[in-house]
Length: 366
Ligand SMILES: [Zn+2]
Image (cartoon, rainbow, N blue to C red; front, side, top):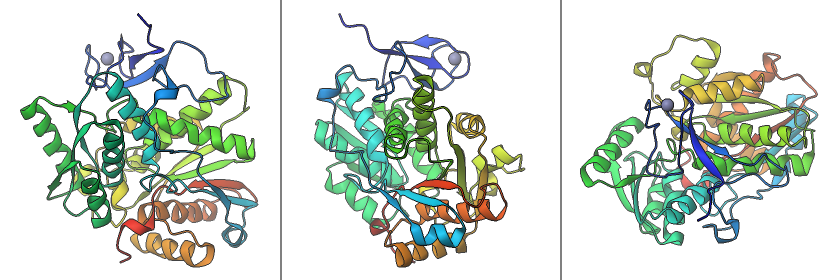
């Protein structure tokens, strides 16, 4: 019998357990799990949990375009501003990188039907990858999610459960459904496998630009891209492909800011949530909050909030001056970048990369 290439390690008590897509928590203490590989990284490709990459459930995700935003860089006083167009993906968001890994593990570990909850993009993505893998998916999403995202979930053949109320209500409903139907909860936020798929974005950045990027600025909600990209860079550091990791800065809408509050020591509770147009990151209680803070602080990065006005302004500015149509959640990162430069956190003359996580085509403009 094959020995798996990894085990799962508890982030809280460090106990280990066998690979599983069903066990989302540590059997000893209930803590969240992370993937721990048996072999050290070699630096050519990210380590991945599946035994055979050649049979992975893939729709051609990854290898996203990296474009130079020259006009914006000049206006902001940067040497270079690189946009990593993560929305150039099979279902139009960065989530496809994680869905490929998570559904491959689910299929290979014998899952045939699973439950997921999402603000929209992850649900659309997992629905597509479930279709490709022949898995049945139940997706719980806020009824207020963009119609383009809800349509995607349905066209891929998943059962869509629209839940009234805030994003958290969809999670609560999914958990109740799982308990009631005894189904597998393949939560992309709780499963340690989803963010493993994000590591490739860091490998691609280093392959294209070497050590040029000094800062990565990205929107953060549940943090899979942040956690995965930092882990990707850590592998590259361990394999001696890079000498240091860029500073990772997490940006949130002021309305929902648990991560920024935790990084900056701001007093904020999930009961202080306000409405926001950045629906993809409107996560008031991210389960991997401690891991996100650790990821940011390990790179000497920081967190910053932005106003509702600034994210819509930046969505239009990016589209009209650079031809990049990001969703509002993604525009948050550019509004944050401007604030970080104004505050002197990002120095003028720096080289910055912003992953543009989702497409503007899925949601209404206003
Ligand atoms: Zn534990």
